[in-house]
Length: 391
Image (cartoon, one colour):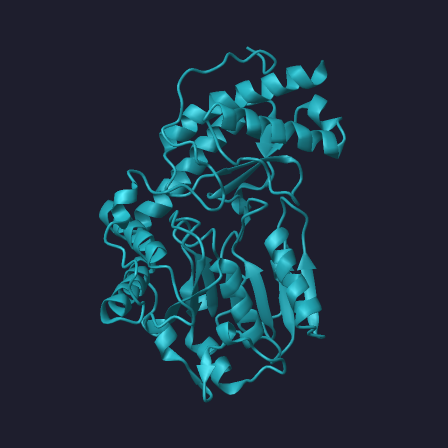
């Protein structure tokens, strides 16, 4: 059977949520897990503080953080955590900022246009490729994403990060944490949000700091004013309360309860190792389908840099490639809409700034069986949209 004539499948995925953020809830999740949330209670109450501290302690243990690293909850999701790090830490020395997708490019804009740091080197690569990591100068601060959510490109290994670096390694790892093993000793700042790999509710970010990052905070004061929600120090010392659950702003205790549920699920199934295995297994299933499919290919051609969470796919059918970019975007949007209307897959269109294509989340909360059910639907949807578009 050619891709022109795929039959309409009958079986639906158990969970059609394949969005790359917010991501699918854990298997078996229901609203009942929120029944003990401290709604109507102060997060500063004894029980509120205990719940926040428990969340940080469970996170630390699941991530296997070094004992001397700090972990805290901050406002505004991963974006807020990254912004706090950039505004609080940069400016003490030159900066190398790496960008190979939309969010990395966003940090370039913040560093050059908002903070207006003059000594900045921008090391870029197009979607589907990765920046030349050999160009990085570790006498400088280095800002980068570990996994490019909008391009499906991840850092291949940690070998390029020097152990005896002078600058700080500042890593936006929101779609990598809990799906890929991170070399904590090589990272000074790591940020993520609950809404990605663990499928938690949005709004809050997590900020992890090494002793070197704390030393910078206590020895350097940026030349620009810091908004209250960005301030990590008080009187020249780190505000340790933030890293005990005494959040800068009021957290949603519903979101806290949901994040705790995700962590408990991860502990129950075997911890971080099993989370990694689930994401790797999902990528393997997608790889098998892509290898057997004529009309689609990975945006990241090099398997060594291919994400196991935000899997970005290019349509390589000759007919599609000869269309204009606007027409290609129409096609991918129609595929997304068709599958959504069939309750097969939600939110799988490629990111708006990325090349036209599809994006499928494959993190640990996704069932490999659901992916296998999805693949025939993708074939059918592409063939159906193509046939109608050509008329």
